[in-house]
Amino acid sequence: MRIPLIAGNWKMNKSVDDARSFMQIVSDQLPEPDQVETAIAAPAILLETMIEANGADRLRIGAENCYYEDAGAFTGETSPQALDQMGIPYVIVGHSERRSYFNETDDIINRKVHAVYRNHMTPILCCDETMGRLEAGEKIHWVVSQVTGALKDITDAQARQLVIAYEPSWAIGSGKSASADQAEEGCYLIRQTVADLYGDDVANQMRVLYGGSVNPENISQIMAKQNIDGVLAGGASLDPETFLQLVHYQK
Ligand code: 13P
Image (tube, rainbow, N blue to C red; front, side, top):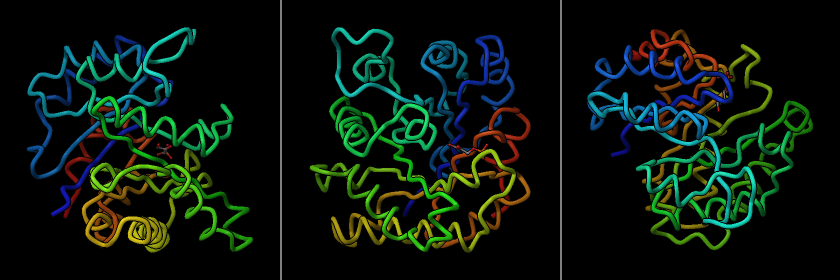
């Protein structure tokens, strides 16, 4: 059985004080992790504060990015080895904002996926799909090539633990979510791509999330879909009360 994962991605939006007060509000009101797993991916600079404030230890605290080398002369980068030493379980890799603003290619993303696994963490691998590509009918090629490129030389055992987020960039931050059917179609396509690469058994174990303007009003419809195992919410994860509404969505 795939346990639902309701995750937030804070991006570059919070101060240390904001992070601490968010944790004070949510940490005792989260569901049992064996029912619904909850996570927030935050900038590296906030992680220590969040870990310290994670009262009941129910929230999984993830990173938004890391470098693909463990250590060395890479000024300003975040070491995946240091993240692991902090006890971080998840790292977002390949978010569309990293692909478009920081020129991350499939090759860089693949190296980061390897670095995350090498350091005993799990990647939340994001796949993009632009409106232009959707209109040009290129969605299938684009999603498949991102998944295939990111997973080069990843083993079956690693792929089994994987989390992939289907995040059409036209739905990110636009207030215009994909419909539940469109979200399901994208997530199904990702699972089929993993099935082609690793077989049905692996594809049925790994989790696929939808991200893009998820909010407390649309989450239940999205979560009702067969191939959607959770969400990756940006804006709706910033406010503690709204995040609590997401994690306690109606089944
Ligand atoms: P929004 O929920 O703000 O659209 O952001 C989605 C996202 O980018 C999550 O990674």
